[in-house]
Image 1 (cartoon, rainbow, N blue to C red):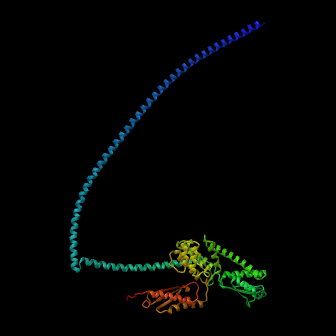
Image 2: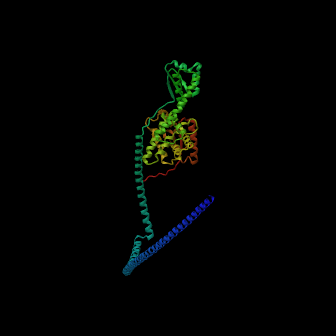
Image 3: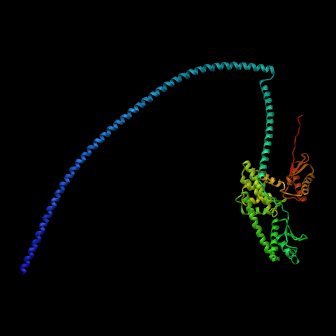
Length: 515
């Protein structure tokens, strides 16, 4: 049994070995067959590639030959065209040369003709010169004057005639220009006045507060007068309680204080509780109300005139002008009217409308605090405008609107004119005629009292006194001294609003008459 198993195992092993060998030989034969087929296929592909390359090569050579032939034909055509163009240019040049030759011949002929003409003219000029010389000598012999003397005489006569005619023409033109300028100025001013219709509010230095009954007077006075004293102390206003039925009069030069006192007193009357503590409380409320009203009035003025960008303090000072009057004319209304008038006139003549309006609105801003600071309202107003960074043009318009300094711009002149128009409007300002006349007479009386004064005139509603002195009695240094002395006399002997300008004029004139 074991022997049989061994044989069986040997037989199986031999069969496996034979099968493996047969498989190896079979795979080798298959692989060799595939390799042979692949080699045949490769040879076939190489042959096809060679044939295709030969075909491409032949086609490329044919195309290259065709392209070369085409380029050759193009170059030959271009050469022929350039040769033809060169020939045409050569023919044109030849024609131009022939034309120039002909023109040169013509010029030579003309030059010969001109030379002959010049020679002839030279001969004629020489003969004319000789003839003129003979005539000049004959004229000198007849007139008895040399050539230079005759020329000077003629020139002097012509010069005299020209001067006379020029003077006459200038005089006529000046008259025409003056007449036309006056006509246009009147037209512009009348148009401006016609288009501006500002209200005027006339106020005095007193206010009247109505009372519900006369018993209220005793309550306002209080025990031993403590209520009235408290009210007068807190407001700075005098309360006049007299026999006027059911009314109390508030008197004071400061309209803002007077308005505060009026509002406070009316509140106390409505409240009914009148004692020092309540009076102090109502006065504080009235001050706040007036301050608010001042700001609203200032803002309304800027809105009405179209002036923007003002400093808030300037707006507040504008509102204070609501409670300031000048000869009965409300200064805020006056400032608004001046702004409108100046703007309209600026528009008519082509000046800066915005600048004219701004300067006109602010021209009297100094009157808001002129009772608090020393100086004229023009100087105070200019300082305020400078402080709150207004432009130089606006500052100049404020400072020059009463002629305190020379005008440097058209807008400043318009502001001064608008100020005069607004103040001179009928009904705008009021002053007792008698007091006004006495003030002007007093001015002239003071000036006439000085030795050497010939004439004196109070002008510009008493804002200026113009004195004409005798030049043989008062010299230039004496004129300056006289102006200073007159200023001292006016300041010491008169009461007047604003300031008065004193002008002393000394001049010598030579006058003759043609008969």
